[in-house]
Length: 369
Image (cartoon, rainbow, N blue to C red):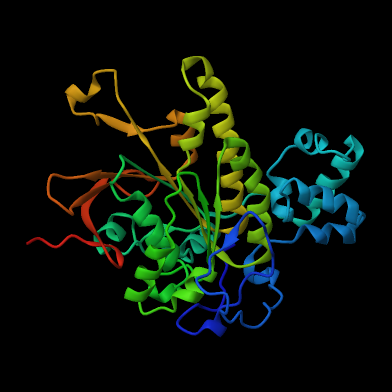
């Protein structure tokens, strides 16, 4: 399921921009005269590991049917398997009989049964990990940010969360043997923290052509939770049309906290947040991309900090905590320029912590003076 495009090093013509035009996800450019390169070649589905939704037209469904599915974010057959019949029936233009027909044909095309554990092991051994820029942080993460998985990074303002995202947005375009994900980056910006200048600085430090790096990042400035949900449909279309290795949401909780205030709206907020997280989970599973979400913190008020528990925890409660495979906390320290990262949750790795710094080239190891 992991995209494996030709890589993005140095020459502009080596990177073909996505052929999908989108008014909301903006491609970042620094010069209108940038060479766009050759049109992108047709993507091999066997290489990508997913089947396009149009394949259902060979099995009794009409183009109108597949267009309806696309309008609800289903650009792959795999994505249809991740929703219920009841959900499909809720789509305008899909009857119960049609929903049944769709699911029957989808199950014929997909192997949805049990898999031998040795096959799962083989798949996991081939997973790509995207380096963070800090060798120590990569160490506690088992090599970097895992693709096909969801990672949460929470911490107070100024702890380095957005700087990690900028570093990953560049590194994800590198070849796998250089610590990259060999794909583009999709960025949902809810706080207005994305900066092209940082991408340029990090690219320069790595010796990359920053024009090409910027051209491989698609950014959407998000203004409310409905907008955030709606962008999942467009995100799925982009991921299906081109080769992406990373999806960033910075931050995942910001707009939900703003729009749902007070305990009276807490249940509604958590349900809305859960729906958004389910969409992200689908993208991660369908396309094998790494999903990195930054999160704000809230203070603990139960007195547990007295007994050694953290005095700040990630926002979003159990809904967000259970949605992520890996959770990392970032903290500032009393030492200027020194940041601390702690691995809080992982299905594979033990709890661990390390120190890192932020430099012109993004995240790096903290060097003792």
